[in-house]
Image (cartoon, rainbow, N blue to C red; front, side, top):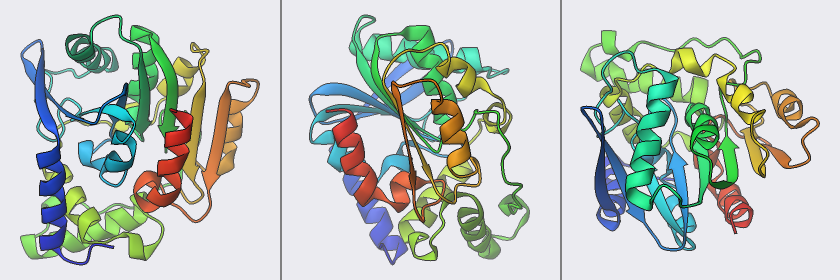
Length: 276
């Protein structure tokens, strides 16, 4: 648990310094990628209203055996926004074009994604191909019912009240255990929220992930937290895996939506085994 903002910022700076920064272009936009580690390429896509730091507690463990590539999605973090409309097809093309530049058009990759990133990852796997294994954590775009949420609009509040709104939103949507909402989670969520220009909610509420998965026949791992309000427990997992023996699924007891942050000690070895 990270108790102070100063400690959180120091940890982020240390991780930033350990990564290489590479930019790719799409149309008039610059997409920023982070690279760390060596081995088989593993691409990690973050969620909506986030950045590459959605994987902050997983990067070191996964980089031990993989060359990790972590973009800030278009319109998030340090990446430029696409000229409107930022459609699903154009977002996928931007990522695919970047991977072709960074790794080569014929290079096989492994692919993992969190939340809204699952919408892009599943459709990227269809459009680009050459994905060996896929892992989706807290996937949205499944098209099934979600728990109604009451999030606070921090932008309308004075600066001194914004952190409490961010903390409320983390507890409502992202993390189940109160202890998981530490200084690191708050710093990352606040920074990502302030920088996000991509409006991903509409795509997250479609069935775009499920439709893409039904066009794929590759090993895939589907993981949700037990208390993930975007998925409804094991029901979505069972529905997506039914009739597909190549799909494995897991519901992590006691965890919320941002499962790879809240339960990194369980998720890191799980992903290491899956992508071994």
